[in-house]
Image (cartoon, rainbow, N blue to C red):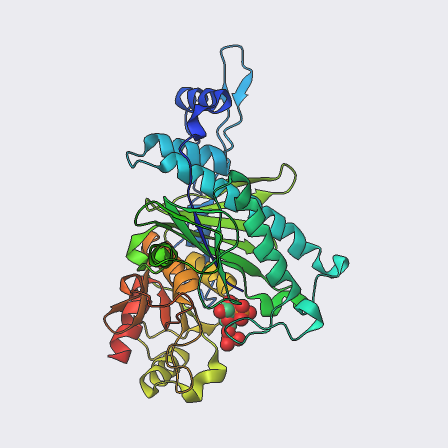
Length: 420
Ligand code: FDP
């Protein structure tokens, strides 16, 4: 289930007294340091997860550094919440409009918390299963789950209180549509509210994916079915290449709820602490291993693939690829879960084009492009095929699909060479 939202963020965030006192605190207290434990990289293991997984885990471990005053009282426990992180980043940033970005990400994180809660209790609350008891189909011919529809509504309502939200495009609509008073101004956001929802009834991980673009220029759209050319142009603000993304991220609903975010200056991961209802920085400055030992693709499509891709995968299985090592296969069939594992452990995730679907399955604007920015920010790569960087692809329609090969730089280079 996918949605595109257009919104304007007013630059008012830093005017409140509470925030200015937080800013003072951020200046006064030392930033929490990142602690890493020793690694034993010389230990060889046949377990594909061992070294790469450990490497990612070491990079990810964060222990807060409490700050005490002269009397020994803890004045800052060192925990970095998402809000604190965003405010501190906005203060450091020289890019105008970062205050608005704080507000936008904050709204998205609230939606993620709500969706996480609903996903966790879906089996109890009766929200599993198909929307409208079945037969509810989106514009792409996919049957909607109840939680697809609910997640879409949650995102809308989380963003609406600002009074800025007004344009929505979803899988049920061919194009973005006006659903409310619309001020499509500074930012345009694209969403897949519940990616991987075909897994939801089996309690398998799902996620929300989002990307944020700058709108080309301020525009106001009325609440009418007959849009003027200027209004249509506002809606088309979503049709930008991934190189224009100013932020991207995903929330993963799994054994824990994790929000991975980039605003164009590195990649950071936050884990929801359910006891306080806050996302806490747990994965600072994520870097993907340069090479992994896992490939992740739907091999049921093998016989429809390009023979070069078949040979590449055959080689990984036979330990005849560039590394000479045998790869493992892991495929959840839920992009956020598969991509999150790839980000931490390294390797490659792909949804290639095939004989039946030349552009594969994944949607450019709210799946491929945001994930590509995320991976590039972590030192990874993402291509559609030889010479085709996903982020360079200019969409010509909202629900456009594209082939994706995404992962560790050495693995993506290898598949690119194999397909050339
Ligand atoms: P879903 O249909 O369950 O929403 O693009 C959506 C997606 O899941 C991705 O999350 C996932 O990677 C892919 O489809 C799985 O497709 P296949 O079932 O064809 O492997």
